[in-house]
Amino acid sequence: MEKNSILNVPLLHPSWKKLAYVFFPLPVFIVIGMAFLNPKIDPNEIIQIIYGSWAVAFMILNLTREKVEDEMVRNFRQQAFQTGFYWLIWGLPTLMIINYLRFDRITSEIFTAYLVLFLLNVYIYAAFQYQKYIADKEEN
Image (cartoon, rainbow, N blue to C red):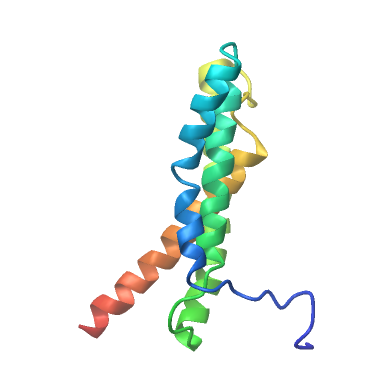
């Protein structure tokens, strides 16, 4: 493949992690502001703001390169993405079953793209961090 291919995704500079960390508390301030502007806001919208903001935070963390981005870390990253999708395969049907048992239907208001993106990116982040932890533990 060419180096300039659209499939070549450049990783973000490590300083982007600071921006990612801003997205974790950000929905709290957005929700408080929205509550003052519109006290009748739908609680499902609040949940979506939280999921969306946290999904963006984890996306940035997942696409931020490590200080040392060697072949092992690239393999960890690829394995983390594969593991994240694998866990999502099991997580989504589980949510559907829980919704069916609770509400007698598969869908619900909180079962949205924001939730799916949040779950996927949390799974990827957790798998990547776990692999780094295991590798550090084996080195010491």
